[in-house]
Image (spheres, rainbow, N blue to C red):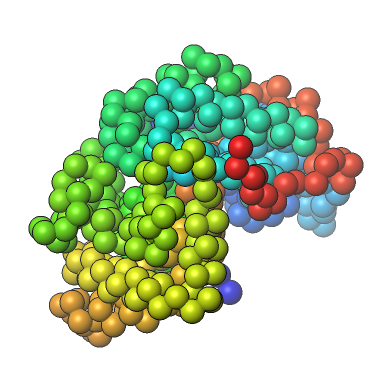
Length: 446
Ligand SMILES: [Zn+2]
């Protein structure tokens, strides 16, 4: 049984201004919305009694939440022995979508849920960002956003916000990617470009770090959900880390904490995408494994063929199944470096769990035993501070899932971000008549 973590102010959580009337109103709307989300359907009187708000205020707040399409009325509830039964309030939000995307070296992923967490879309397209200019990559991202927004519209869902995950250092206040070495992006104003392209149709777009978003997804709903001290590793061409310490995401002074892939581990090693020598990701990134096992199809070759990471892994597994001894040796080598680097994280942050994402999860059965042994060898606290590797079950969508989660959190924190036009969308009572939500669809390379 999974526990659920809570969001204690992740990236993008709005800061509160002075407590003016509008702020108090927003805060009370958020209080009622969260109360219904956490406790289920209840009468206005019950909400008033349980939140400490007076009944007139709750009635007014409920009217506004109804108009914004965030809650709905449901069957009559008996308020008590005296008085007539009234309609109960319950969370709706089925017409309000949260859209998350991820741009990575070899794909763009999209993931969306409604406010209740129902998955509305989950897909990935192969895209070679490594061999594309930032302009070309942003064009492709804009196309993906437009397609996702259109698909959600067909489901009767209006998008309340869009967050894009990028593997790099992000200035979240301006939506600019400062550095994303594996994408070759330096000072790219992603949010501005997307807003100018008007792909989001006036929906706010925010940009955030992929590993941090993935860590939040794991913490709230993943295999180790609710573990207050948790490290997530992205397991892609680049290795990013999202660090949850004491139930909070560790941001650092500039929000750049967790760049574990660029911790130097081998002064005589290979050159990294960031330009330095011997970074951890030059030992454990997917590009390294691919180069060791299938050098003929290594990353960075300009053959024009775009391969999804799942395709590359399938090829590696096929070679292993065919008896190629180099594959097991290469995976074990990655496992050793994975454990050695993770020991540094354990010595620094004392996590209880290290969640392996991306390709690490796919090869977890082979990687974890080797990495765990190496971790115990290099971790100073040894068995006293027990830390285990676990494989994520979010595949390559952890970051886009976390990005959608950020949007949901933003709506719950400030319901006024969804305007009253949402009320024109079909309510959840008509859900049965809609197209089925798309699930786990991977599009073929184009
Ligand atoms: Zn590096």
